[in-house]
Figure (cartoon, rainbow, N blue to C red):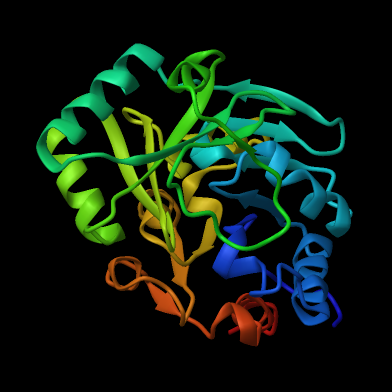
Length: 271
C-alpha cells in the first residue's frame, strides 16, 4: 500500500476486540494499514484498559516504540524507552468504602486488582472467574493483600448480575466515589473518579502536539465511549457493545475481519 493523503494526524486504537483478533494476534493487513498511515504522517497510539504489564509484549511484537495509554487511562507509557510517563492510582481507602457499599446492597463480590507500575501484578481473589489466556496473575486469599500496595483499578464480579447490570447497579450506589466501566466480557472495573481513556489519550496527544480534532479512534466496549466523545471521529467494530455503537460516527467490520484496516485504507485512498 503506497502512502497517500490522510485526513487525521492521530489514530487511536483499543486493543482487545479491536486491534487484536480473538487469538490476540494482529493481522498483516492491519499492520500494513497502520504502517501506511504513519508513513503518511499520522501517529498511532494504543489506548487500552490493560495495564502496562499486560500490554508490553503486544507493543514489542508490533515494533511499537511510541506512547501508549494503558490501565484505562491511568498510565501513559513510552514503549520505546520502557518507562511510565504518568501513572494515576486508585485511592485504596475510597475503593474499600465503595466495595463495602456495593456489597451491603447486593451481597458478596468476587474481586481482582491491578497493582501500579511497570511490573505491577494482577491479583485474583476467591471466586473471581479469569478469562482463558496467557496473561499472568497471582491468587490471594487474605483480603489485606489486596490493599498492600498502590493499585490502578479493581475488577468486580457478581454471581447473579451480568456485566451491564452489575455496572449499572454499582454506579447507582457508588457513582459519586469512583467510576465503574464495562471493559470486556466478564470485566467490570472500578476506577478513580473522572479517569477514562479520554483523559489518558488527551495527555498522550498533548505530548505529541496533537488535539482531539486531529484524532480518529477505534473501539468495541463501553469504556471506549469517553474516547469517542473526545476524538473527532469514533469508529465502532462490528463486534462492539451496543452502547458504543449508539455513539459511534461509523461502524466497521469486526476485529476478526480487519475492521481497522478497511477504514484506514478507505481514508488513504481519499475516501
